[in-house]
Image 1: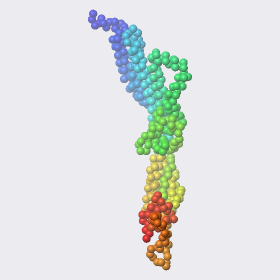
Image 2 (image 1 turned 90 degrees about the vertical axis):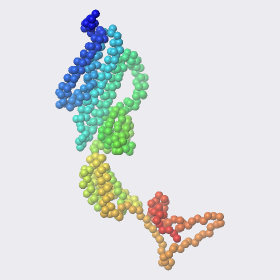
Image 3 (image 1 turned 120 degrees about the vertical axis):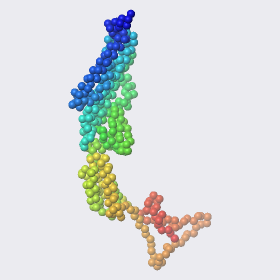
Image 4 (image 1 turned 30 degrees about the vertical axis):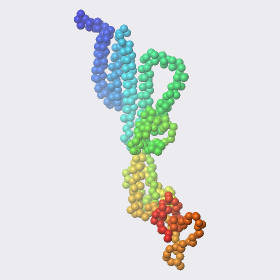
Length: 414
């Protein structure tokens, strides 16, 4: 018997032996691979004028190749006779691989459609409110669809096993209790998923929104299926669950528009005239590139026992520019006062009174007669020798700056 005699039954029934089955499977996979290698560039060139189709074909290039290969193998395994040893486990593995590849292909299709929509609405524009709205909705919905595809794919893979199919049928028979238990166990996951859909539809936050959450200022950097990543001003990241955003209040500075009004506060002396400061403010904002020309106001908003409080309001196109503008205005007004009105910066006032007797002339003040101290009692130091005279504006406490200054530099009693 020669090797030709061995190949004769394989040629007549190639799927009835492992050698013939392997040869047919390899030939079919190679043919599908060659068709994919030839057809993929053609499809990409045809879809190049269409943005959505171009992105989709780019995203599904690898998953489609694996899906075609698994589909070809599964067709070969299905045509093979059941008497072939180890064929049943191989069919199960092939079915699992085919479901996994199709799930991957579906996920990439959903991601490709979302990416195509995002690319058609760029954020690098002056007024990107509509684009940020589209980005937020697309990303959240795309991730939700991907999560559903994964759940369906895992369920389909589990249904391949007969034992798991029987368990699923029994669970359907007791759907009420099983649904209650599953709902309680998956409450955080389901809550975040529902919160993600609420954010996608109502949009309390969008990508690149400027928000203040629990005193932290930052921008919305990423919205996932379970949390929001906020990029803080010092490059830290604040991770906020989606459900927290739905249930708790926070500040959104760019909800309807990125334009914003900021404030800067100054403290000056009562004698300082306000008109020169208003003129200087107008000159500073006119030369500032951050000012949008809408608001520039200087007002006295408070008066304390030591100084006046000035509030400066200036407007800008966004919060980043407004921060720089407020710093520029604050620095400019302080430099103007230092150069032209240095005596009108905030100062502490104290009124010191002293009695002068012309008959006695200059000299030490007369001493008060001392009172007798009973024996055995320690003499208490006089108030005049231990403490300086209290002024009308000092609280005479350690925390009061006027009182501490008087203790350090005030006149000593004789």
